Image (cartoon, rainbow, N blue to C red):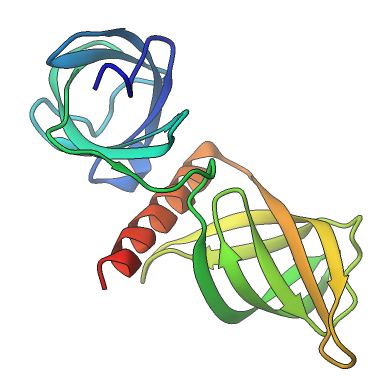
Length: 197
């Protein structure tokens, strides 16, 4: 684990209840655990209760399950996990995400078909003319009861063959870090589910 988690590394921690997502910085690493100092109070995180952890390494996006051995204010001693998994080399896990939906800008709506998505952005196709300089609002359904509000900023527009519309890639911004982390977790879980099919 020492090669994977190092001092000053940023780590995302997601307890069983999404709304208590938190981030922190690794302060020290030993053979059996590491010390993580959180940005916020550790609400929803309990001693010996498993949480999901995500961090970016030089080998790619690292995912593992572990638990806090001790909690002292914002400082947590996290047990080294028995297993870990690299999701992919991208900063954010990208998944196939095909569906019809709408994006909104300045009171107007545009019909689109999503092709793939990550917490960093998405690729879509549409027959409507999209202004590359505008920002578009989108809600992504991440569970039966939860959706994430994203702002889509087009970066690249490619005209498809005649009468097939436009292929558009862009990046996301969010109102809150919680929304971004919910999308990170959704994409990571779906990626694992798809690989295990």
